[in-house]
Each structure stands twice: as structure tokens, then as C-alpha cells.
Image (cartoon, rainbow, N blue to C red; front, side, top):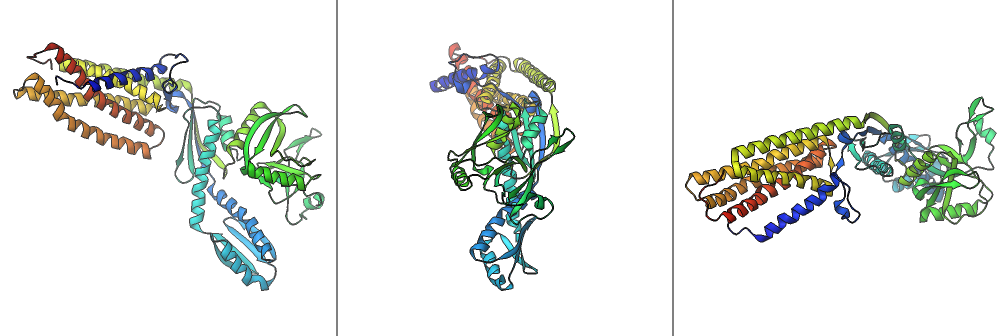
Length: 527
């Protein structure tokens, strides 16, 4: 006890300095030269800062049907390559229906489809028709992937809003919890998150008869789509029809970037797209092969525009116009840059927490922490005298360490997190209580004060470690499997446990070592 290791003293001083530097951003502004890693204040959760709480339902069955529709083109190419003519090729839910023209091609078609589509179960539906049904294991994986992909897309869109510490997690098999602290525009958030943002480029069928197609005689391989609603004669809305090739030449998957720009022709806001290398090559070939023809830019099932290809475009960029406001153009660029949702999402639960409620929660939480600290400090000072004051110093150090650690690691403080801090206060003092009671026992059996101190710390050490390790394991499990506020509680509890073990064992022993070392021979302890 007389020779407390010097390196531990330097360790305590270093931790104290870093803790002060890490906690300062929470109470004051800092100079520009302050280390970046120590200049972030603690983030507040939704329940403290206010914000938006949404629960989204992902239409996972739609993701399965889209996956099946994407295989139509593969089936078409495989049949054409094998020179097998078909009468019908369509998708229905999780199945593909293929009707072969010539009965003599049935055996060849059966063999080809069985070899090409391993993810499907092949059956015959009569009338020269094969039915390919997606295997349930594949459909289940597609549904799971749709939710996981939707989470990543939504995260990209929310991050572009500039918010801090959004919570985006999976709930159940097909729901997503979204919490955006500090953001109050619920309508914009819902519109931004919920947009499918499916972008397609299709060629206009210049040779087809639009009037006949509108009457029901649609040419094979074509589809009718409409432009945005617009007034005609000031009386009723009108949507321009287009006869388009069904084949999608380019999609939003080939977009590398999307930025807000100004259309020089009309001096309006627009969105300029930049394709990736694959998309740029496809766009180059498309424009080179169809000069003088029109191609349609389709956003979320609506023909945004159908410009004429004047010349080959080799730069790999395109522009979407449409009389956008600055906010609309910015939001469209965000959703296109983040990518399309793999399936539609629907808001099934919505809550908006105002900042006043958040401030009330902060005040109540802070009051509980302050009152808890004061009561603990008073009890320790009265019951354990000088040793109680040492424990109080360590407790203040512990609180400082928690605040600094939460700020440095970017942890989010929630109302349950505040409860975790209050619990940590009790646990930190509990470790000191074990040590001090052990010291009292050593004194009662006749040991000298210094020997009693050594014995108290040594014998209580294993008990303290065991108790804190088991609690830390529980906190880690809560963090791993919990969500939202539960994770906030787990984070503060974990940080608090590690901090309390350091302060209760190392810091208090250093202070007592310094105190006993200066006094020389000690006859009695103030405990």
C-alpha cells in the first residue's frame, strides 16, 4: 500500500484529462484547435430531443412478384435462343406462365426451363402451358432481402437530411422502425422515405398506332403508360398517353449520382443523373442506335418526359425536368442517389414528439440523476466519514467519465439511458461499500490500518469483478437483441459499469494511498 504503482497514477491523470476534454463540448463551445475526436457533444435520443417515430410495413410479396417479373426477360431470351416459339409469357404472383405454340416443342421447352430456372418448381397447367413456381425457400430469402435492402435505402435517404443518430431497425419479418431525433417535418419525412423512386428508361414505339392501342389493340411487346396529370382548358386533369416498348433499356440501378441542377432552356430546377460505367455504356449504345427516336424517362410509373434523341450521348448523363421546386428537386435527387426501394412501404404507425416534451423528459431525468447523486453523497459522507468522501470523489469522476465516453463514442442518450446512469451511480457506490465493509472486518479481527486497507481491497476485488462482469454480460445481451430505448439503456449501463470498476477500485485506492503515505504511521482510520 505504501508504494502505489506510479504508472497507475499517470493512467488516472491521463483518463481525467481526456474525460474533461471529452465532456467539455456538452457545456461550452470549443476553440478550432480542439481535437476533432473530443469535440462532439453527446447526442440526444428521440424521447429527449423530440422528433419523428414511424413504423413502416414493407410489401414483401410485391418484392417476390417483381423478382419473378425480372425473370420474364431471361425466359424470353432462353426460348428465342433455342428457337422455341411461345404464345404467352407472363408473370402471376410468384409464378411464370409460358404457353408454347407447337406441341412438338414441349419436350425441348420442358428440358430447357428445368435446366435454366433452378429456383423454380416446374409443372404443367394444360394447353401447352408450363407453370414455373418460385420455390418457397427462395421466396423467403427474397422477402428477407427486400426488408434488409429497404433499411439501407431508407438509411441513405435519412442521412441525406443531415440528421444525427437516426434509429432504423427491423421489427418482425416485414416491418421497419424509423426514429429521427430533432426532425419535425413529418410530411416531408414520410414522402421522402415512402417514395419507391423506381426509375426506368424505355423507348417510344414510333411505328405503333397509339389510337388503336388505346382502343385495346396493343401491339405485342408494347405497353401504354401515362404522363403526369395536367389541366387542359382549365376544366379537368389530363394525362398524356404514350405507347412504349415493354423492355426497360435502363433503370435506376445504373445511376451513380444524382444532383440538383438548373435547366438552361427553361431556367427551372432539374435533376441531373450520372450513370455508372455499365449504365454509361448502355446509354451510349441506346442513343447511338436510336437517333431521331424518342425515349421515355419513367419515374414511379409516370412518364416524366419523352425527349427526342438528337445525337449520340457518350457522356453517361441525363436530366429529369418537371417544374420542380428547390425542395422537390433536392428530395428527388436524394431518393435517386440512395436507390429505389425493392418494394413499396406503407406507414402503419406514426408519432411526432415535440421538443417541449423532450425538454420535459430531459429535466425530469436530470432531476433524478442530481437527487440520486446528492442522496448517495450525503449517505456515504455520514456513514463512512473520510473514506465516504473518497468514494464521493470517485463517484464524481465516474459521472465525468460516463459523459465523456458517451460523447467520444457517439452514443445516444435516451430516457432509459438516464435510468442506466442512475443505476450506475448505485453500482459504483456498491463496489466501495463492499471494499469499506471488508476493511472494517479486517480492523475488527485486529489487523493494522494499512494491512486492513490492503486486505479490504484484495478480498473485495474478486466479488466486485464477478458482480460487474455478470451485469455487463446482461447489458451486452440487451444491446444485441434490444431496440431503440433498450439499446440506449444498455449503452449507458455498459459504459457506467466499466467506469465504476475503474473509479471504485483504482481511483479510490490511489487517493487513500496518497492520504496514508503523507500521514506516516496511522493508528486509526476514519471509516
